[in-house]
Image (cartoon, rainbow, N blue to C red):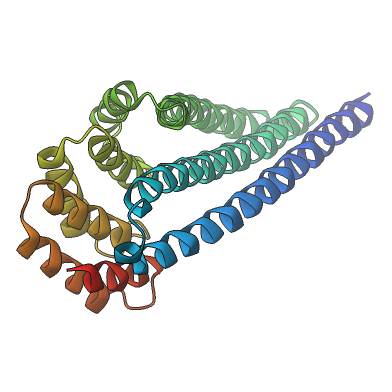
Length: 261
């Protein structure tokens, strides 16, 4: 009977793991597709920025494409969050299976080892309970983050802004906190709250200069300065971006913008 239970538990764990792996593979495939679309759109925007002075309607077209690009990045970010969640659930499945196997082994141990085995089993259950609680907190944070991103992608910038601000207040040390701060700034730019966007993007760059979001934060900071009518700081920010992150796609866009000034 013990062997049957062990085999059954192992089979269930492996089946769940296969499903998790397939989900991660599918999500990564979607993420790659969206990333390529975002890169193509990014390159088109850069070309159009270079031709800004030659075509009177370019500004309005750029604004539309800029929003499309931001929404594509939002979808890529959302997929990355889903992949992270599936990875964590897969880990939880392994942990649960390991805990159940240890419990079964403890039950089958000789009486003389009962005290030690019981202690070990209690420790395993305690660790599992802690991990379960942590996973529940992570799931809640991920769900809140996804809702905020979905609101942005739907064009509901005011609601998305409030959701991301609430996320940062509730989960300031979460691994997605830097990304959440980036989307706060994006929402503020979309709402033409240039002062708020300036503060948010300055904070991101100063506190997280090594983040993958830092180059785009500087580009958005330059946009905020432009919105505030301060072309001097806008140009200085673009130059800082090019100097600090010369190989980033944001640096290419910064060069095109500088040609317009």
